[in-house]
Length: 285
Image 1 (cartoon, rainbow, N blue to C red):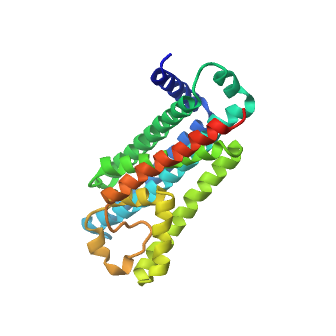
Image 2: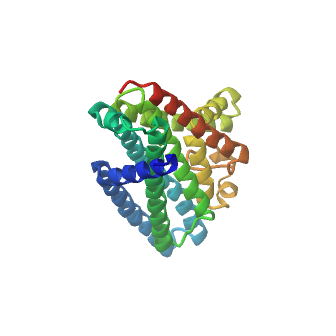
Image 3: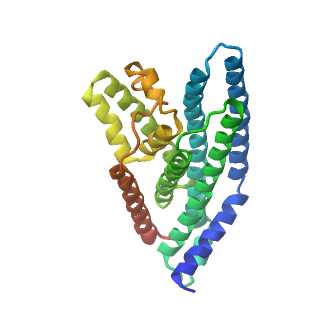
C-alpha cells in the first residue's frame, strides 16, 4: 500500500471513529442549544426594531456584534470538541495498545499521524463550517442581517480549529488524553484573554500591555484567526458607528488579517505538526 493511500485510509477511519464518539453527540447538543437560544434572542431584537425601539440601522449594528458573540460561543464549542477528540485519537490508542498492532505492520509513524490529523481536520472544519452557516441563516431569517464576508469568516474559524487540533495532537504524544485536552483548551482560553488585555492596552495607548496580545497571537494563532473572522462577520459600519470609545471591545475587530499573519499561522501548523511527528516517532509504544 502506498504512503498516500495509507494516509487517506487512516484519515477515513479517523473520521468514521470521530463520528461515533460521544463527543460528537455532545457537540451536536451544545450547537443545537446555541442555535435555538440565538434564534430566540435575534427574534426579540427584530421585534424591538419593529416596535420602533431600534431603527433598522441600529438593529443591523447590534445584530452584527451579537453574531460575533454567538460565533465565539461556537468557536469555544469547536475548541472543546477538537481538543478532546485529538487526545484519545492518538494517545488513547497508544495506551490501549491499538497503535502497537497497527505500527507492527510496515506503516510509517508519520503516515499514521498525517492520516489522523487529516481526518480530525476534516471533521472539525466541517463541523465549524456547517454550524457557522446554520447560525448565519438564523440571523438572516430573524433580523435580515448577512455578514459581508461569510466565506472568509467561516474559513478562518475552520483554520482556528485546525490550529488547536494540531496542538492537541502534539500534546497527546507527550501526556495523557484527558490532560492534553485540558491543556489545549486552557491555552485557547488564555490566548483569548491575553488578546483582550492587549486590545485594552492598545485603547489606552499602553504599548507594554498591548504587546501582551501581539505576543500571544504569535505563540498560538487561535486568537488572531478569531479576530480576523470577527472582522469578516461584523457590519463594516461598526467601527465608524462606535468610534474610539469602543476600542478594546472583545467582540469588535478593527482590521482584517494580513497576508503575513496568515502565512505565519500556516507555518505554525507545519512547525507544530513536525514536532508532533518527531515526538511520535520517538515515543515508546
